[in-house]
Amino acid sequence: MATKRSGPSTRRGTKADGDSRLVKALGHPIRARALSILNEEVASPKMIAAALDLPLGTVGHHVKKLEAMDCIELVRTEPRRGATEHFYRGTVRSVLDDEQWAKLNPDSKTALSIEWLKMLNKTAKQALVAQTFDSRPDRHLSRTPVNVDERGWQELMSLLSRTAAEVQEIELLSSERERQGESAGRHLRATVALLGFESPPPSEEAETSES
Image (tube, rainbow, N blue to C red; front, top):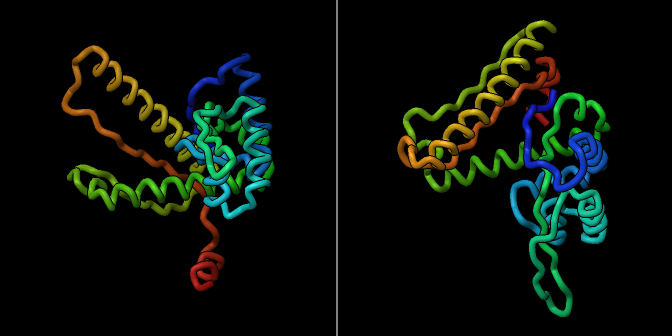
């Protein structure tokens, strides 16, 4: 099940148009991974190619496709030894609701999951290096393996969806207090990660850890 989260709105067209364009954009694994990167930072096709360990020409082709689909925008250009390097950023979030997620092919789903996990790992590493990860005594870190039936699984996913919505609401309320000059203490960046996935059977889990 995909995490339900609303991101920046598309720059033109209706929401349905934006949803259809996003699903089409993410229909190819390379575009899916490239957009995930451009949602997090400004980058050029060369930088994306290096991150994905893919040929620049291949990545450049898919970046142009994303631009044509209005999923990214050009931020700046820089001269590079007789050529010009183009830098882009995402204009739509590569996070889908359940209906959109169901329309993606398996390869694109895997590509997005890999990229989201890499982004989470990168963010956690940065916090550890900066010594902010454990700086607050009330920070939360937990892993909870559970055994549930199909109904229990649906209840767990519903809980995560509600929690994600509440996280967004808390952010909106904090921003509103800041706008009105009524902030409760200093403002800070925080990362809240919610994961819910089916684990492999114990036998397969053991084989994976040994390989």
